[in-house]
Length: 99
Image 1 (spheres, rainbow, N blue to C red):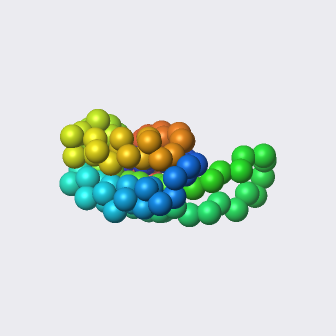
Image 2: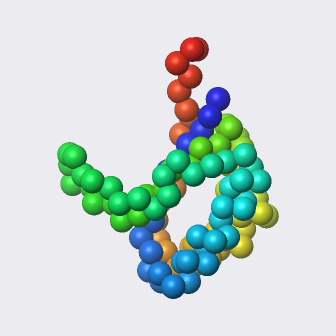
Image 3: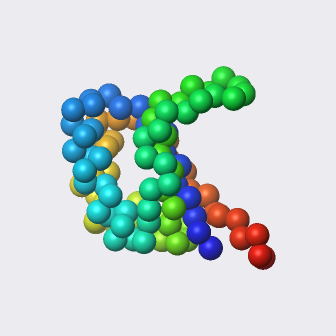
């Protein structure tokens, strides 16, 4: 069942963060993931949340998404992201309408 990683990122160093944006897609693809939303600005419909940069990734499963996040493939990119931004990242189990 698919899984979705949602990242809310506040970029502190936009110049160096560009390197992260070049590095991360390779590791995501290596784990069967893909971008659904990449860095989109959100339009708030309700509430007080004012997100900065939002990213939505799809992976084949929660387990694969967690393997990607902890992988050597992603380690250098993750370290760069953490050095150039702050944020939150969660993984969600997808919904199977046929189940």
